[in-house]
Image 1 (cartoon, rainbow, N blue to C red):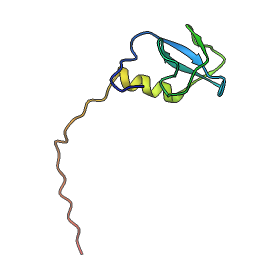
Image 2 (image 1 turned 45 degrees about the vertical axis):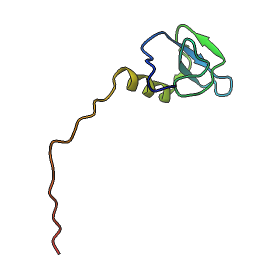
Image 3 (image 1 turned 180 degrees about the vertical axis):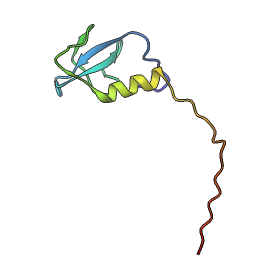
Image 4 (image 1 turned 135 degrees about the vertical axis):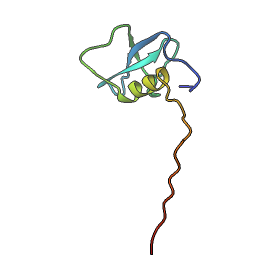
Length: 82
């Protein structure tokens, strides 16, 4: 997934034939999940019998709730004694 794309739009669930144990998040116009796994079957509702792909979940949360870069305000002066 291109980091500039916004997955808050329309997403669906997908399953890969290569690894069917997980349900992946997929943008509607894509053939690969947010974790870059190709999907073969798509669903509007999440298939409840499968675990959600943790890589897809992290990619989705990171895109929807981006971390703000905060400049450090505290400087630590560490001196070693011999």
